[in-house]
Length: 317
Image (cartoon, rainbow, N blue to C red):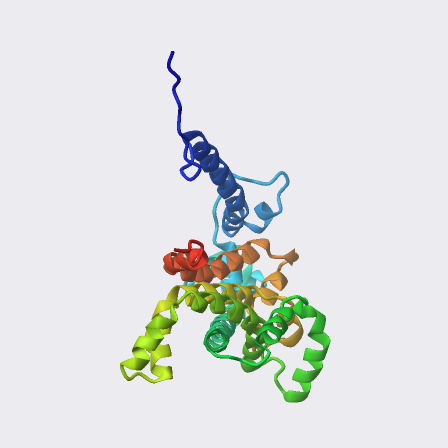
C-alpha cells in the first residue's frame, strides 16, 4: 500500500488562491472606479439631467458643463441676442439656445495654473530638502539623531489644520497670504517630514561601499552624493515625489483659509461654481475630471518607479 504525498509551497499560491485574489481585486477596482466614471458622465449631462431622480444613466450628452466651466454667461433679452452676430463656437451656440450670451472667460484656468505652480513647486522643494536631510541622517553622525528624527516624525502626528490660525496670523504679518511663495513654503513644511522619513529608508539600503569607492577614485563627498547616491535612490525619490504631490494637489483647508484670489488653487474654487439657479453640477464634474488629469498622468508616467520604490527593501539578501 503506497501513500502519495503532495508537496505544497508556502511561497507559490495555489490556483484557487490566485482565482480568489484576482476576483477580489477586480471587484475592488470596479467599485473604486464607479465614482470616477459617474463624475465623468455627469460632466456631459445637462443641468436638469445631473440632478434628476432617479439618476439618469442613459442621457443625451451635451457640453453645457464644459462651456459653463470655461466661460461666464449672462442672461439677455431676445432683442439683444437677435442683434448679435452669429455664434462663433459651440459655447456661444449653447448660450444662445438658453437666451444667454458668453460674457468672458471664467476663473478656472488661472486657478488650475495656480495648482500646478504650487503643487509642483512645493513637491520639488520638499524632495530637495528631504533627500539632503535624509542623506545626512543616513551617512553622518548627527548629535541626537534619534530625537531629531522623532521630532520630524511628530510633525505628522498633528493634523495641519490644528495650527491654521497661528499660520494665518503669521502669514498676514509677513505678507505671504494669497501668494504662491507662501503656499509653496507651507506645503513644503508639511511634506518635508514625510520626505525625510521615506528617503532615509531608501538611502539606508544603498551600500556605503559605493560611496567609499567613489571617494577613493577622487570624488568629493558632494560628487559622490550626486553621481552615486542619487541615481541609486531614483525609485525612492519618485515614490516620495508622488506622495508629496498628491497632498499638495488635493489640499483644501489651507488653500481656503490663506488664499482668496491671486493664489487660489482649484480645490476651493471647484465647489463654488454656481450656475443659473444654484450649483452647476455638470461644470463641477467637468472641473473635477480635468483636475484629475495632471496627477493621473504624472503617476502613470512614473508608475514603474513608484512600484519599485514602494517595494524597495522588502526582500533582503
